[in-house]
Image (cartoon, rainbow, N blue to C red; front, side, top):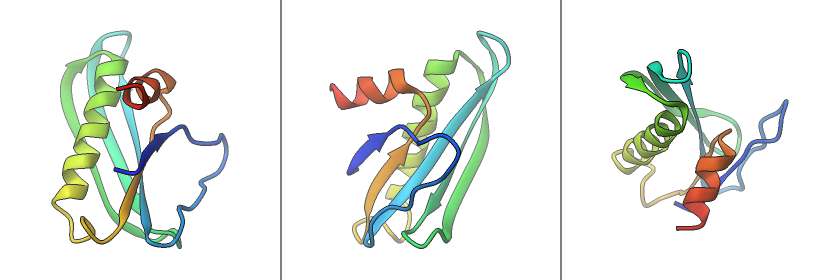
Length: 103
């Protein structure tokens, strides 16, 4: 994984050539509730290479966002682009991004 970053509001910024970007997000009903995760993998031209979405049961928003990032990593690792392209993961959770950056 090359880096995890927070998206700029209102638009999608393409990664550099040779990179792919996974935009991930989570949704939780209430503070703790039924949750789902999803992600879209795109190349530097914006072409969608792959995507996922799934229910994860009951979760809080932070745990759900972490599960979304983990699923994106698993999804990418089993894709034909693994080892060919560098990966950028983009999430809207500043807390989770900071956790990962400071590991």
